[in-house]
Structures are given as C-alpha cells and as structure tokens.
Image (spheres, one colour):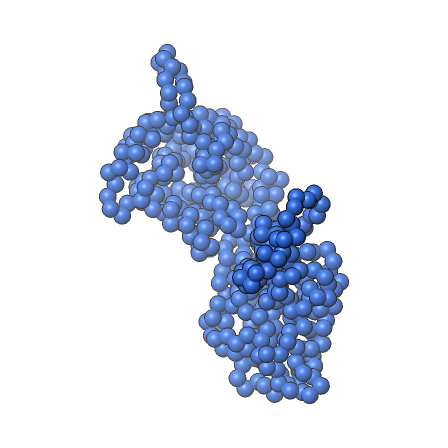
Length: 435
C-alpha cells in the first residue's frame, strides 16, 4: 500500500482545496497520471500519481480543504495484495463509517464531506483480495441521504436544462454528478423526459444552497480582509482619450506580423511606469502588522482578469523594462493563462499596483477594492463619445473615466488626486509616454 500526502505547493501555503478528482476508488492509474486538481490561494495545481497502482481510497470529496501533509490518496501497488486481504474488513468498516458520516450531514447540499478516507468496499467475509470491479459503498451516499452531490456549475446547468439531478446516475466520488454524467444522461434522452414535467409556467418556490468554495471562497476572504482592514478612498476623473485612441488605431493598423493588437491597458501600464517614481508610496506594499511600507522600484502591474472560476490577478512583471508592444504581449499572455487555469503561482503574485477594467461591459464609475497589500488600484471605465466644451466650442470627444482607490493610511487624498491627474495628462497627450 502507498499513502500519498498532500504536497507543499508553495511558500506559506498550509492547506489546499481539492478542486476536482479525476480518479475514484477502484481505478487503475499509471505513474504521473493526472489524478486531481488542487487549489491554493494563488493557483490551481495539477497533482499527478507518484506510483502506478489501483486507487484504494481518496481523502475527501471535491470541494473540501485538506492540510498540507495530510493523506490525500491511497494506492494498492504490486506486492501488497496480502496486506489488503488482511485489512479488507477494516476498509469496509471505514466505508460504512463514511456513509454514516454523510447521513449526519444535512446542512450542505453541495457535498457530503468525510474526514476519513473513502475506501473501496472489500469482501471481508471471504477475505478475498479487492478487485477493480468491487463496489464502493461511498458512491451511494445520495441513496442514503436523499441528497445529490454536484458542483454549483453542474447544478446550474441542470436548472438551465430542466433536469432533475436525482434522476442522473453519478459516477464521481460518493455518487457525485459531473458534467460528463449530465452529457451521458442527455444523450440517453433523459433531458427530454425531464423537460416534459416543466412544459407549463410555474411559480418558482424552491431555493438552492450553494457552498462557497474554491476560488470564490478565496476571493471572498481576500475582499473581506481588504475592505475590513484598509480605509479606502476613491477618486474619479474623466479623461479625454481621443488622441490616445487615434494613436492606438494608427499603431494597430501598421503593426508588424506577430505583434499583438494594442488595447488601452498597455498604454496605462506604461504611463504608470512614467509617473510612479513621483509617487513611490502608491507602488508599494504595506505590512500593517509591522507598520512597514515597502516601496518598489519595479513596476509589476496586476491585471484583474475575470475567469470561469472567478476573479484572478495575473501580473505583468517589470513593466519598466518593456515597451508598449512587449507590455501588450505580456498582458495577453498572463490573462489568457489565468482564464485557462494554467497560470503559474509566480504569475499570480508580486504585483505592486493593479489595473482593473470593466469598460468593455459599461459603467461610468466604479469603487474598486485594493488588492492587498498594495496601496493603490486604477479602475478603467466605459469609453464613449460625447459632447464636451473644448476651447469654447462644443465638440464630440472620446471620453473615459478613471476610478481609483487608495489606502488612506498611506496615501493622502491630495497625493492620490495628484497621481490620477498626472496619469490623465499622459493619456491625453500619449506621445509623452514614449519620451
């Protein structure tokens, strides 16, 4: 038997959430096979099998949090069949205990967590070795508890397609229903049967409790901590980006093969490179426990990025060493890596100031929350053409608001306003960014 512990996935990480299992008790796996996704507060990490063998037990259901160093998964390897024969009755007892634990859990509709491993059932009466086809008592938790185990995304899809999850056979740990199970159910015609019961309009009286977990749980904790500990103040200013848009259109129309299409973000990042030396306390980290402000020379710009699993902030490192084209390449690269859940931990940490943009969606102002331990965040809002007075004449210009927030413990209102005004001057006169 081989017991694999949850590995240390980075400095300062003491626990991780099991985001998804790709194996279940009874499965045969090869060494280095992808067995699970583990989520830290920095990234999603793929965990691979350290040995070849058969899965005897997994530590918990997807969505639960384990401490680093605790048992993650147990394998049967070559040469330990006798041991498994001897312990078969213990495994069966543990499996029953897992089901009993699930029966007691009536509060969580998204998972039936167990703190013991969930082993595959063995035949204790005959003392026979465990086989790959042996049933797993933990896979029938739903039958005992009356609950269906599924992730929030699976539940949402089932609601959208009018599918009763209770009628969908689950193949995951403890009978958990996956998207693949839904696909199989729909392919078999089950969705048509399920929809027939909802042919007429009905009053919606049910409610679904969704456990906050994974990246959403991490985001909730960080936002609460930032809002609770940092006295925010926000400053909004309008910017005439007509000239910047003309320059951007010209550069995009004449870009060389292989060069990316420029958005506003690379220009804002490069403008920050120009002005932050005048405002070093806005390109800084504040350790409130030790009353220590670390002002950085490097401009590492966090790019707030919406992904399928929630908000992430990949980082473009050392913007001071990049030109606008190189900045655009890095913005696109790290943002896409975050959306694909392939960003490395070092690409999701180390930012010194953050840019957040909701302009593509709309909205004329926001009050962004600071990405602690930073002291400033710059928010980009909707760009729109509207009439303005310029030199005593009403003209149509392309206008955009910048909504910025600052840590008032470190950045006074005057300083924050001065930074935004300096940024405005560069964006309205974009040629100065390159001088």
